[in-house]
Amino acid sequence: MKLTRHAEVLWQGGIKTGGGTVSSESGALRQHPYGYGSRFADQNGTNPEELIAAAHAACFTMYLSFILDGAGIVATQLDTRAALTLQIGADGSFDITTVVLTLTAQVPGLDQDSFDKLVSQAKAGCAVSKLISAQVSVNATLLAG
Image (cartoon, rainbow, N blue to C red; front, side):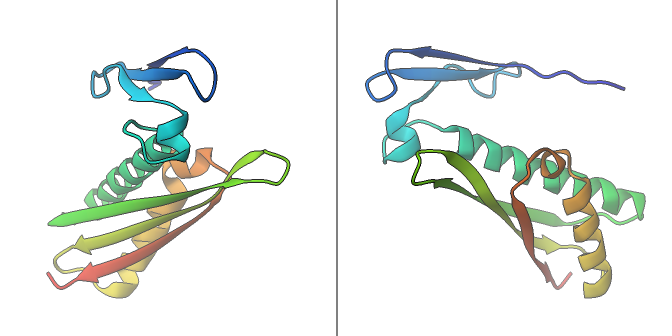
């Protein structure tokens, strides 16, 4: 199976005075604003790093659910937050240097060692983890079932 997903960006103007919109094929984003202010200041709108962080958290969580299903386990809840760091170098270059996924999970009947192994598999196998070359780490907490 091969899937192709689409997104579209429209930008008008200069980097600091211009702005753009992001739209996704599914309609989840419809001409959602983004720009210099939403990326580097506190203005409303989204930014590429936030979108990558959301995609990474979603991909990792869904893949963990897939792995759990394969083991005959159903999670009550998987709650993942992603913290992505964009570092701006002295030369003005931009690098995503780290992504920390913080998972809090409620998985009845699963012990900590098994949970840790499955989380590691999900981190390594998630398509977004494979896509980015930043250091990816996961802080995972298993709550009592």
